[in-house]
Image (cartoon, rainbow, N blue to C red; front, side, top):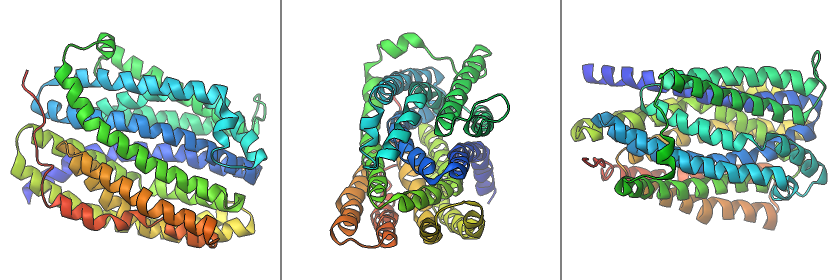
Length: 449
């Protein structure tokens, strides 16, 4: 019992700042939707669809940061901080490279990108104006998120949470000033939301550089970003990151297809889906924080060869995730009347939103369980391939085809299509739990110098 108490005390110390950071990040999207919703429904829908580009980018840097966490958590737990810092340099190299590609694409061909998500010319024009302004954030985000990943591994989760949350507060304030044109600022509408995001991201990068200068977090070895003699570490990084990258792209591509499908069902469906997704993301912040914390704690245990302790802790965390998911579903049901009251949508969109919130309430239970196991337990010991196979097969062989058939062939109602698109978490639970019980994730993946 004392072991469980100390375990959960450590988990809460890691999860609380990470979950709070996830929540605060979700608040930015929520504030964009809430404030742009006051202008008109097209602004809300266009920003939601344009935001899918940032989501796609997050799949890439998410995989790079995930790979960092897998390796660095074990080396940090082992006490080899030098190698952990080298993992940071490797991860930063690829995050900045992909960030630069997204920056150039959104700055040069934003209309072409928007046509992927919607055929509506009004939404294309508005979304393109958003992407042009926000384009620089992609390369800045690559730097910021990679550093945040290393700070969480290196016992600096509170610092990363403080920096990220402060930027969120700044973003929300600037949203208000720029979108509506308060005081000396001109009314910029959807472009104002983009500018607020850009300034907030730059403020995060500046804060991180100040923290590095004050030696409050690990120093980035720029030389190692371009060249490293430790070829074995580089191979290990890609060994665990490639499955994560395929998983992220496969899963994220499937989720993006959800937006594409809903985008072709009308602006009412887009608006309702964007609000329901925002609320679900905000409530799911705790679930994602737990998954991150579980990966860091178990990774440290496995790096110290505490295999039996890791097995017991993993089982405890899995059971805990089910309770957290159920509680999160109850919270979504509780806030639904408030969301319906304060969000101004067309009557049809309001009707869709009511039932999409109900779907979000049961969806989050499966999401909590699967994210803890697939994103926390399995990668902690280098088991990154199973999650890739499970997510890609579930989405691309089951849910996305069924959703497209329902929407474009059978012409099912919007809510029936939305229901189909919530099946993925429950389809994969049996396979996920069966693989968990094989304990293939119980490994020490570090190498001695």
